[in-house]
Length: 320
Image (cartoon, rainbow, N blue to C red; front, side):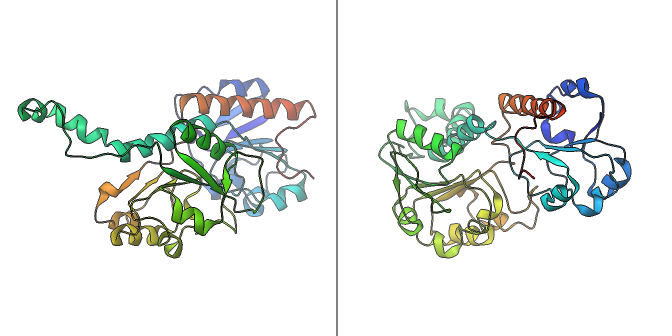
């Protein structure tokens, strides 16, 4: 088969993709432009992609295209109606990043809680040695034990976050944007109650009509002035201009964001207008990207192509 990897750099240069070559001729693009798809990939049968938008306009000339493999769980970058019309199979990958995202969730929280960076600089600068005191309590920090942790989206990742938070002694509750009940030891709350009761609110929900801009100024005002918001799901769930206002006005205590409304973050982002940047922890959509997570992802892509060649496609998005 003729295969193209459309945005190789999104997987990291350290990832070995040679396993794809068992299926045929592979052409690698670091980041092909959307407008180039129709001309540069006209003979391809398989596309492997993450962020490149694929639609009727740029796929119509790919007469041999049979399979699109997404190196992600979400499939909003692909026109599924068109691929169904054409009989093109689309496969995604789910569950590969759960341990990585959970770890990053707590890494960001503990960075904000414990401010290890401040203490590290204090020691390395020589100020600790010159202080005459065995400790430094000028940056007080709280414990997670006994705190109330509210989770928006109790799927695979949210459930694992709940498990770990419970192990630290936090009291966990959750809100379901879909309205579905789950068999779980955690209390399900309506959004207003969850926001007003929680010391930490973490978002692990998909982006859809129910969740876009779910965290807006009205809902941010319902949170405790000391509470921490964490978003490791999808950027547009949080309205960033409202979050900046909430931080500047002291409606909440801080926010940890790994995802943004526009990625990469632009200079025009309202987040750069937060006056006290110590209230913000920002990372570049990296929660999913541990070494092991990316290795699992590549392995699943290979399995998806193998299954397709055997006539038993797996992880198919919206069966025909």
